[in-house]
Image (cartoon, rainbow, N blue to C red; front, side, top):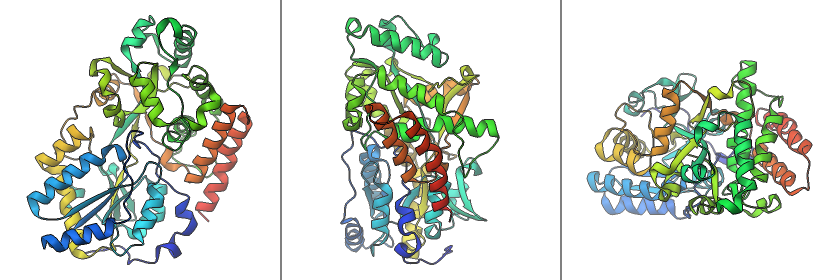
Length: 449
């Protein structure tokens, strides 16, 4: 069994730098109550002893909204093979902290994930080389793999899309359709009108509350912040930087201003507003627009598939009428090279089964709503994914997920705090710019020595 690097003591290797790196909670569903179990390691070990199986799987799952689906799929696999599969799901926004804790246990996860190159930097010494695995052979493109030299350290397992989900019925009642919104100026005009007529239309605001607690702030300090980064990278012809310039931060300001003024609540209340609040407002037909992604379908499906639409996040950049939705991945599987040979093989076999078997591909497409980058993938029944595909078919340019290049979780937190203070009137936009630009340079330097 080929392993890349033997395990070292994690606290000595990563220390505070890994603590500063967290996965953006894309798909950190506000409706989930799943948390990581402190007994996960012992649970996996006792399961193995009970079944007598050769090897076991312990998956530390990042996506709370998919916890039940993963638990069910794990049960099916165990019933079919006899191999114990334990799935533990970290609480929203707590994945990196949970992973650090679990990796120090004698029964550490055999399967974990990173959010991209920046996240990988702290965990590559723990990554089994997947280059010779059957799983790697199932990828539809090598672009979905992360590498360290010739070694394949991790593999993306889901491609996702986000934008501004909207209620077609409410938008129509206000006198508009998606055809009326081709850029930021149009979006602002429509939202301002809805906000001005909210009593007449029976809504509390054009947009759901932009909650800035841990269950929701990732939508703005990470996903919304991706837009000015994407356009700066595009203008400069780069894919990462040690010093962001903030070229498009005025555009970031105007979309944030729109979110917090044409809203269901006073901007001063955003610090305590949650992801659950936003979902309740949208599903309760109290808001027309809701920034989120394809992973949120289960939260909003009660509105009816035919009633769900999705707009690009327009920020007022030239040519944005040709912009599509934001599409990419921050979900990369890594197999723990410190696990036993039997557990590594069991984990590889489980992953291969997930992406090739009828039960696995059906669960990932139909239950989880995933678009997976593997040869035997099933088309998802998630209508939001169908909308994303329509944009591509129309020739719209998808916005890359550049937030995997954000230098640290601490940087995101700094931007989030500044956004919250600005909304509450206790801080200025200059503070947001400082957190964005100066914070980037500082955190990049800390992360890269």
